[in-house]
Image (cartoon, protein in one colour):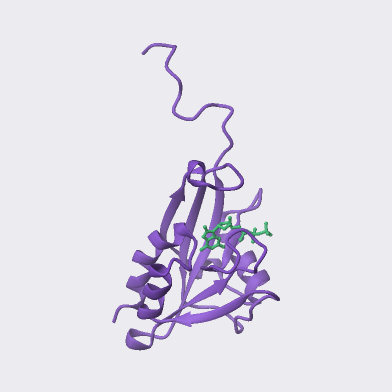
Length: 159
Ligand SMILES: Nc1nc2c([nH]c(=O)n2[C@H]2C[C@H](O)[C@@H](COP(=O)(O)OP(=O)(O)OP(=O)(O)O)O2)c(=O)[nH]1
């Protein structure tokens, strides 16, 4: 191979931003609902509905980060063993991310926790059924990355 070829990822490029989020599901069959959180106004994607979660900090595993974020944002305690990888989505920096880095979002299914989710100041929560989730995706009231995640999350709500 020629030594003049550029590597796919230049050594100088920033690593992707790793974000974890939880698809918290309660109830079964027709009663199944997913928890969505509205991002506080003033934050990136402010006012849009997303899966609760946040960035993985240095030294954390993704599951540890999710447990921490769910405790911080919702005040619930989740066992890492109850965080089951569900799907992921990737957004390129070229698609308009302010930080200028690719973003990889790992979505976990969580069906067990302790406590009752409570929104942080400035945020809001809603439990959606399949129709509610579709409506948010179609109306683009979710971050672009979440539209892709919803296709899989929707299956958690199917009878
Ligand atoms: N939590 C979450 N973030 C998402 C989703 N979809 C999506 O594009 N994002 C983006 C928005 C943000 O750019 C990034 C998450 O950052 P964040 O601001 O929530 O992370 P954080 O809780 O660590 O926040 P901070 O303390 O740094 O303010 O991922 C989603 O469904 N959930």
